[in-house]
Figure 1 (cartoon, one colour):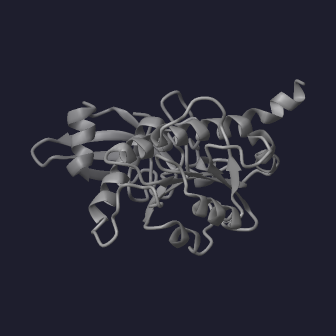
Figure 2: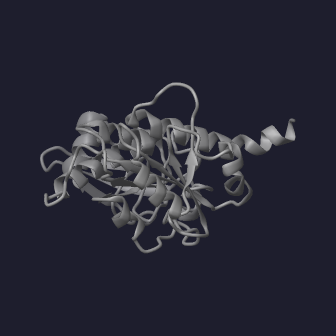
Length: 287
């Protein structure tokens, strides 16, 4: 476990009691006990070390004392702040994954890997060639399952952001959403926005002649600029959907080489995007 998430704000020196799933995970799964220090993050995004004061096995609860977190090998590489400052936990370039619905448990895999790769938000969208169709159905249970997967992936990976997730029944519904802002409150995450974000969609053919490093140059040069990536289903986007996305200011991204499944295309592209943004300036300096 890289970091433990607590869905409440905490204050230094004020003990916190945990029970239920949190108790079972820390005591029965992790085998933690009195005196152990656990790197944690609260609902305000602040980093802490939780000192286990006592474990009550009869009541199924444990008492912890939050302490100011110091950076360490056990704490998240991003987000550990001695003062518990939530600003320290925010990524410089938020990446927003927009994923076409996949079959069965593939959505679980996509969500888990995307969170581990550091995305800040996930939107699942039913496209023309998506097989699942949740229209008219209660999606609450699925969203709760995906939120649980997100929490587990954040705790395992140390992603400094707990990504929000939403489900949409068609592309136009998603694109018609009001503009959202990123965690810093400045860069619109809505991929159809004309300014403030960089919207991309993956296409199996080279529709544009600009390579990915050139498309990402605005993000590399502007800290805080968000990048949105829309990944299609098995079979890709329909021609009509491609036109809708391009009208919404999306740039088509093409990866040459092998054919990727929808559950691997997103993680492949996220890794490429993050590497280019983080290391592109070094490549320029060393040319």
